[in-house]
Every structure is written in C-alpha cells, then in structure tokens.
Amino acid sequence: MLRAATSLVLLLSVLSIIINLARAQGYDFGVDVSRLTRRQTASPILIGKLPLAANGTIPVRQEIRQMRADKHKWDLFILSMSMFQNADQDDPLSYYQVTGIHGVPFVPWNGVQASPGANQSGYCPHSSVLFPTWHRPYLALYEQQLYTMANTIAAMFTDATERRLYQLAASDFRAPYWDWSQSPPPGETHLPDVFWSPMVVQTGPNGVQNIKNPLFSYHFHPLDEDALIWNPLKQWNETKRGPEMEISLTSPPSNNSKVNEALLSKLPEIQQRLYVLFSSYHDYNTFSNKAWAPSQGLSMMDSVESIHDMIHVYGGSKGHMTYVPLSSFDPLFFFHHIMTDRLIAIWQMLNPSAWITPMAAGEDTFTSVKGTIQTSKTPLTPFYVASDGTFWDSDMSRITEVFGYTYADTDPSRGSEDAIRNSLIDKINKWYGSSSPVGQMAIAQHGVGQPSPFAHASKANAQTSAFRPNVQLSANKPSSSRLIRHGGYTEWIANVRVNADAIDGSYAVYFFMGRPPTSVFDWESAQNLAGSVAMFSMKHMNKSQSKISGALPLTSALMKMVAAGYIADLSPAAVTPLLREMLHFRVLGSNDGEIEPETIEGLHVAISSADVKIPRAKELPAWSHSKKRLELWV
Image (cartoon, rainbow, N blue to C red; front, side, top):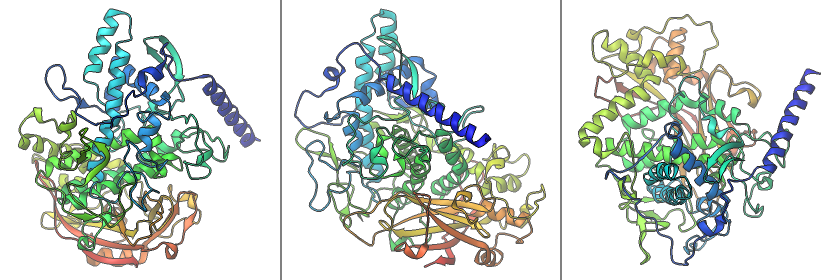
C-alpha cells in the first residue's frame, strides 16, 4: 500500500513537471530571435580568437559555481544558452547543429564532406592523438556563439545603468566548466543544483520570466527520430539524465539525483586516477587518448580520455551523455569537456616539451578512417581558421591563449612557468593526492614538523573508498611500517584492454574483492566493490582490431585488506596470491544487462604493480616501470 502511494505521488509529480514544461518556453526577448541569431552569409564559418579583457589580460574560464556568484555574468549565460538552444535547427550556428558536429546526424557541417566509407561517425576523433586538440576549436566555437549572444543581449537592456553592468560582464565572457574532480562545497550537491530544475525564474531585458532551464536539457525542435539512432532515446523530445524508464519509455523523467550519486561514488577513484596520470604519465600520445599500442605494455593504459569516459557513462546513466553520437546534445557535455580541457592544460604546463608524435587513428570520424596516421599537422575538421580553407591543426591549438581564454591555474600572467608549475604541483597533491594511498603514507613518512604536500589528507581520507572487506575492521589503519619500504610503497593497478568496437554502446568493467553480488543492481553499492573502468564506445561500420584501454588503482582497497589482516603488506609476494584468489570482475552494459567476457572481442584484464617514491613538498610521486603480476582474462 505504501509503495503504491509513493508511486502515485511520484507519478503526479512527474505529470506536474510535464504540464509546467509544456507551458514554459525559452526566454522571450520581445524580438524575432531568429533574425538576431541566423547566419546571413554562406561563407565558411571561422573559429577565431575572442577579444582580450578591457585591461588587456586573457579572460579566464570560470568554474560554474564561481560564475554563478556573478549575477550579471550568470544572467547573460542563462539567457545566451536559452537563445542558442531556441535558434532554428536548420541554422548551421544553432545549438542543434553545433552540438551535432560531435556525433549525429552524421551530415556535413560548414561544407566539409565525409571521407569515403566514414560517414557513419561524427567529426570528433575518439581513440586518437587529436582528441585533446580537436576539442579546443570545437569548444571555442561553442564559446564564440555564447560570447556573441551575451554581448547582443547585454545591449538590449533599456536601463542605462543595467545595460552598462551587463555590457561589462559580457566584454570578457567565457564559457564555464564544472569541476567534477573535486568534492562539492559544504551543503551542496556534487552535480551542481543549477542542472536539476526543469524551469528557472530568469531576469532579462524583457523582464522576469519563468523559462525552461537550458542547463536541465535540450528540447529538439523538431525531433528527428531517423537521425538519433537508438531506441528508446530517438523517441524522447528532450535530452535525459538517469531516465526513469520504468515510469515511461517514451517520455521518462530525468533523475539528476541518481546521476549525482553515481558520480559522487566514483569521485575517489577518479581522483586517484588523475593523481596517477599527473604524476607518472609524461608522454603526450599515451596521456591524450585511450587508443592502446603494443609499445605501451601494461605501464601506461590509462589516459585523460579514459577518465573523461567515466563522466559520460555515469553522468548519462543511460541518458544521452552515455551514447557517443548523442552525448553532445546534453548541456552537461560542454561543462564536462571544458573541465577536461582544463586538465589537459594543467598536464601541458607540467610537461611543456611533450607533444604529438605520429599515431594511427583508433576509430573512424566523419572525415577519416581508423588506421590513418595522424600528426600535429592533421587538419582538425570541420574547423576553419581562415577563409582560404585552412583548418585549425594541433600545432595551432597547442596553447589555450590562441583562442582567447585561459584557466586560473594555468594563466600565464600569474608568474613564470616555473612558478606556475610549482604552484600546480602543490595543488595536485592537495586536490588528488589526499584521496590516494600516497597521501596517507606521506603524512606518516614526513612526520610532525616536516614539510608535507598533503595538508588535507586526513580530512579527505574518510571518502577515499567505500570498499570494505567482508570482515569486522578495527578503527586502526595499517601501520606505515607495513606499507612503506625505503621511502616508497607498491602501487597496484587493474588494466583493461578491449577492441574499440567490441560492444555497440558504453559499458563498464567492475572489480570486486571476493564474489560479486548476484544482481547487477547491487554491484554499485557492494561493500566489496573496488571500483570500475568505464568504456564510452559504439560499433562502427568499418570493423577493425583497434584497441582501447583504461585502468583502476587498487591500492586503497588493498590497504584495507592489510588492515583487516588478509595480507601482511603491499609487496608482490603478499598481494599477488590474494588477488589470484579473491579479485573478480564483471561487465555491465548500458541496458543494465551483464555481458559475458567471452562475448567481448579483444578483452584483456591484467594486474600490474609499480614502486612509487613518496614525495616531499614541491614534488609529485616518482614511479618505477610497471610489471605485470597477474592476468585475469586473456
């Protein structure tokens, strides 16, 4: 009876939202917006450099919560997004067509035609050394549109004082990012609440209005079911996150609470993976993308692209973000990708001489087929830099400043490169080191009164992992003498490699210390879950044996096994037999179905270890070469 009543309340709530959404629209500016937004020329669309701030500095892309604290900038952002999303979908500079560059509808944009046999993909190069640099002009195009609209809207305010304040805010407007790698401020949700509500009360030049929240979803107008490919998503007239398909298959409500919980549960392993990436990956090709080459062995199987995949898979939770060709329609996509670009800029500051070396493309794009050798001179189609038909390339896109933006942590005006680099090392140790095993060990290693880069480690340790061995744990942590040897410790990593198009859709590989729960719906909350590796993928028309890879640090879970008395220390002699006996993995598809490993082409799961030197202040950990210790699946 109680369950039935709860279901009825939920259904009535959903119906109320649907009714209110049907009434709500984008912001009414009181003018024909299509005249303001529609492109009036047939010449190629160019991506250029946005103007400097009035004081001559390069404007900074802000974190979303920081921008929200600036009323005038935030108003302009929401108004610009509303205008952008409501532009006619047949306009090449509409939200629909700009987002469609990434994936569907698999049609030419900006007059750039498909390569033979490659017209069943978007322009975005996944599993490619171009992954970081291709997104720079793409995000710059998105930012360019918002900047233009923000300045247009600012000029619409009739009150002179208001107009001046909004024009000042518009003059150095840059698109914001969402820092999904950090814990939220006290009292706030991990996924910021600005993404949760389907409607928002918004101030603008035509008064205060109740409008559709342009950060909640994108409404297709019209919906092109033939272009959107997947059932049941192709029936949904707006983007969804965590869709409640048990309520409705054709119009499920989004569940941002589910997405928030999923992403928050993955935060510790995301932070640990980022810490490993920043401290031990120094080769650009390996860092930049998830395509695997035999030369990598087991030592470098993670990448910024693979970590970025986690946000797609869990940020969509079966919604649009989970599907490669549909993901960019969700407004969350751009906040996520600007954050990814920020991480890339930080890594570049730490590794200034590392750059692209020729590498074969791992997947098709609209303008290239897998296997094509790509270099720093490969055109980043479909983005023109000049009207003579010159495309942006990676050499041109190597630094953010060429597009007229920077990030607070990499801003060249803040000091010398060495000073910025030293500051970044401190920040990385605090941001990500404190959630990693090395943070706990550094405090023990340095002792009281000695410099430690992990000032916040003890505060963050409580959230490092939900993993609990199936035994009664004492409150004591394992003695540092059992973990630290000769100023270092042994890090353990699970490595996953698989054919790029092994499965049609995204999936995740889950690791358990002991037998996994029988039901897939219990995996995420299982006490013996050590973590997961998400694969953001799709099948392509051109079958190939290209490989992609990702990695999961296991050391946090193993430290708890030491504390529980399962093993004496983290040495290979102690850990390898334990993992051989207790470590299990399972594969979960995007439809909540378990996938049998033998049906996954090219699947290889192995465990490696490396010796890690614990850092002091102004240092990142130093890593030895990884060694393979165990194969779970070949």
